[in-house]
Length: 168
Image 1 (tube, rainbow, N blue to C red):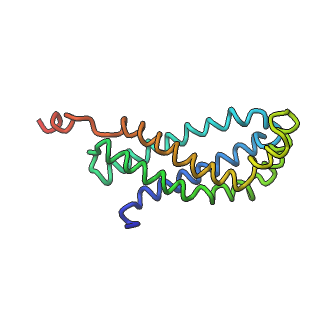
Image 2 (image 1 turned 120 degrees about the vertical axis):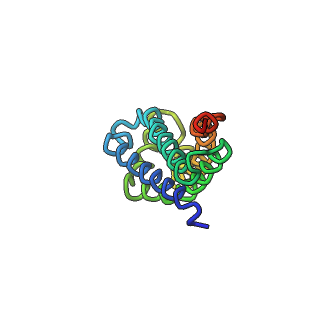
Image 3 (image 1 turned 90 degrees about the horizontal axis):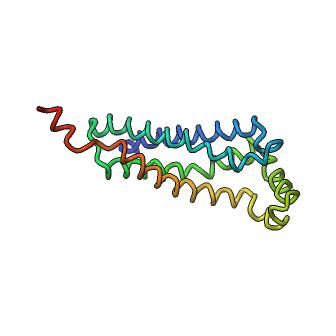
């Protein structure tokens, strides 16, 4: 079974490593402390490499597993498999981020939220913590992965008629 989805596992790990790299980049750029006010806006730029990884993954899997001929359903199903693996890996990614890459993030964002009257202390503490972020990362990975898979599959699928034209 694992051999059957080895490419999907490979691409999920590439995504996992990209996310860790993104977290390091965010920390080094000050988005987890000195420029925390920019974090809610700039963190969303991670969508660019995330979508790119899905595109590259589906193109490679189309070429290798489907001999260049992949239907929308096959592409979408492949994207869903990658998404599920990413969601399974997301607690580990969150652990590495929260305890190794940026261990002071939760304290920083709690203090910032309270100081700028964005939340009460209790609201901030209940939202900005490891457990909450693990739950958010799992559901975020599933929701965004399904949407990304659905859209990317439209562009990666083999268009009808292409094979017929090539064969004539």
